[in-house]
Length: 257
Image (cartoon, rainbow, N blue to C red):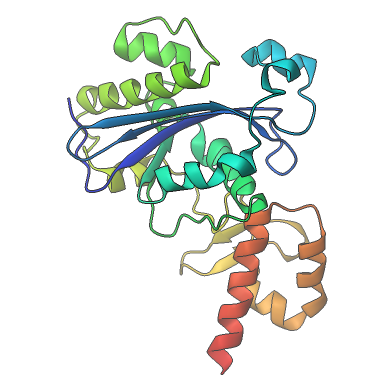
C-alpha cells in the first residue's frame, strides 16, 4: 500500500552513545524519505560522536570508537540532514521520546535551527504498544511476517519501521491513512518541548511539569520569579527546552509592548 501523504515524511533511526538526550551523541543516522507520490529516498551515515562509545553500548549496536574514528562529526553533516528533513513530517520507532529529542539537541549544538512547529510526528512504537504491546523485532514479525535479522542497524530498523506502519494501517480499520491522524494517535501527553518539562494544559497554555512550579503557567513563573529563568538556562536542561522557554519569554515580552 501507499501512505496517504500531503507532504513528505522522513522515517529515521539513530544509533547513539547512550540514552541521555542531553549528553549522548549520534554515531549513526539513517533516513528514509517517502514522498506523497510514493517515491523513496534514503540516507545513511555513521558519525564521529567526539566522545567515547561505552563498551556496553557497542555490544548493542555493534559500532565501536574505531568504526567512527574517520567519520564526519554531526556538525559536518548537519546541513545535509536538515536539507533532507526540513520539508517533511517525521516518523520513527520510539521517536517522540528519544530520536526526535536527541536529533534536536544535535541540530541545535550544530547551530542549525530546528523545531516541530509545522511538522507531524508519527511514533510507530506508540501505535504498536497501543495495539499489541511488543518490541520492533516482534512488530516486524507480527505485522510483516519477517525476521529483523539486522536489529540495531539503523538502516534495517528504519526500513522495518516504515514497513510496520504500512502494515498497521492495513490491519486496523480505526487507523486513518493520514499523517495528522497518525501523529495524534501516536502521541502521548502534549508537551511544548521534547523532554516533557513543559506541558500544555487543557487551555493550550504552557505549564511546568516538574519541580516546585509543577502545574503553574510558565509565563506566570517567569514574570513573578525572574531568577528562575536564568537558573533554567544555566542548568543541565536540553537545548530545545531552553529554546522553548526563551520563545515563551520573548512572546510574553512582546505582548506587553
